[in-house]
Image (cartoon, rainbow, N blue to C red; front, side, top):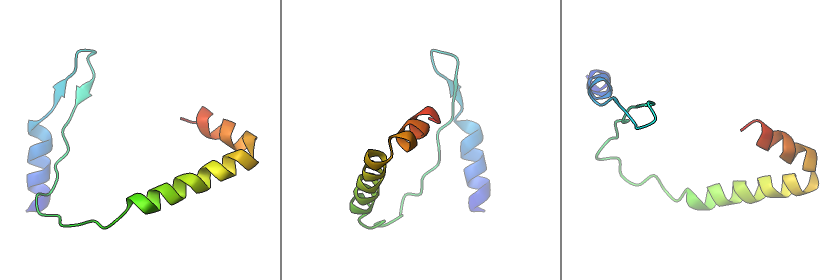
Length: 67
């Protein structure tokens, strides 16, 4: 049932932006509740990645080239 609602929503919302790209809205649940405090975890992982880049400039270069 939920999958059908998601598919219907997905099919009803496509549009094109001024550059011609397709834009599709993603469905979100209304009553999700708290997902917890993920900001601290994200910041910790970001700082860890920054430390790795500082100690390994080649890794940093490879990381940014792949973006």
